[in-house]
Image: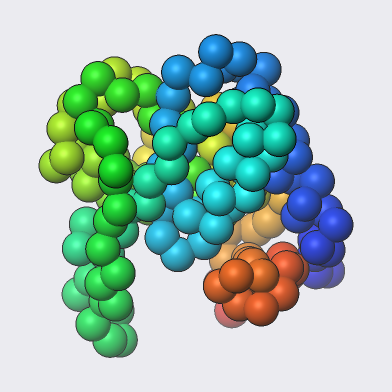
Length: 176
């Protein structure tokens, strides 16, 4: 069995995220920070929706390449693209955005990276896809879609600006 999301379903998930964030913070006293390389695109799309609602929200991008705990296992050197945080992290209320929440290790790396920039007042997590199977105790505040996957399934997310198309395909990995 494989699951998938179409471009329209991805767009609907981003609408859900923007609506939930707007409902939780109608005064707009937060900043969006997208995790490279697809969380930043999801954050940009959320920002478009929030701008349509009249909000002016700062947007930042966080590169967590050097904060990963699996660097020794990667087949190649990480591609450093740099972070772009055009605001102070100190005292900021951050909505951290990623494409998929799985084990929580990416979020741990992102929190480590953020703390190198300063001390946030609060961090909430917005994810386009929640797939479960956490290894670390992180839970999303805002969820676009929840997919039922097994621990070893592959979730392949493609987004227009990064990959040229919008799609999500879950494929089974029968080699457990």
